[in-house]
Amino acid sequence: MFESIYKDIRYKIQTGNFWVRSIVLCTVIFILVNLTKAYFTFSNAGFPGALYYDVIQSISLSSEWKHNLLYIWVWITHIFLHEGFFHLLWNMLWLYWLSAIVEDLIGKRHAILIFFEAAIFGGIFFIISTHFIPWYEGMEIHASGASAAICGLLFAAATISPSYGIRLFLIGNVEIKYIAIFVLIMDLILAGQVTNSGGHFAHIGGAIWGWVYILLLRQGVAMDGWLDYFISDKTPSRYQKPKETRVRQTKFKQTPSKEEKLNRILDKIKTQGIEKLTPEEREFLDQMSKE
Image 1 (cartoon, rainbow, N blue to C red):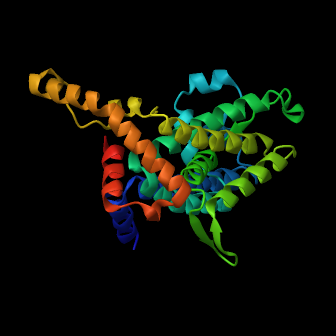
Image 2: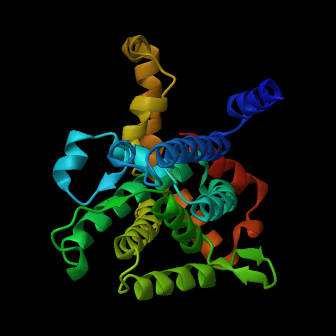
């Protein structure tokens, strides 16, 4: 049985896209973290103990800059860490839905970038907010979870296509702009409460970045250049070939016209919805996302 489960998980990781792998990763980390917590709680008279919290804090984002610079990996690891079951469940459901929407609208590359950049921007909002919230004074607070990243995807989708419909259980079809506004209002309200104030500021930061990312994209400013260092399939030697250099120069000269066409398509999505795009426009949008 266990071997079969292991094979299923490995198959999903190997064949699934980035979003499926992220969901599997979050789920596996959740299980490992809670098994570890159960072990320490059972062996320490009902209290997880300092060692457990040291481990959790080493992969969580802190309100202290020194911690985040010393453990630099926390800017990424905190995204995939969920301790609570419902925190994991709702985040993964929304990640599954919203990632597909944003990827369909502007491509996988931009969707992944919004996911990570919104999480980091939300983390910065979290850190700044903890130094102004009165009840956090003198305390070190830690944050984890993909909520800020998901808020970034939500507001990116709502900015591109405000009238995009999502069917909600017991409610029916709701335009995504109203879901985004509802989430923002709730975060603004709950940020003033004692419980998880820093987390709600992180959500607001992620939402702002999702909105800003699309505004910049419409102006021809793509925040994806740094990703080439990690996902580019071109080897350094190919850059030295004269033919490859000439191709790159030609692409560079064509950039302004492509940007204008991309802006027209994004404006059309905003006003009329993704379903109004012609097959040629969809093909061009997909090609631009790959570039």
